[in-house]
Image (cartoon, rainbow, N blue to C red):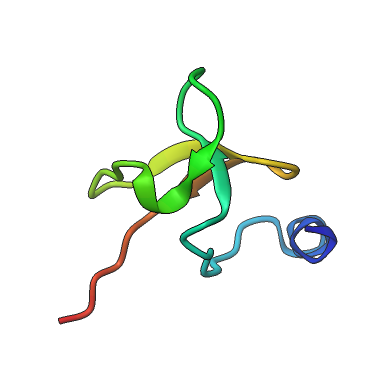
Length: 62
């Protein structure tokens, strides 16, 4: 998590991949794995445990 915080401090906005088991909080219902969260086509704002709010996109390669 410290690496993510360092990148945020140095670069502001950036893109990265997140593992499907990373815990996020999409609403006030508690933390759950990223894979179980429904994501919109325009991105979904969630709270990443230990980091803060982020915007998550799902990219599907066919």
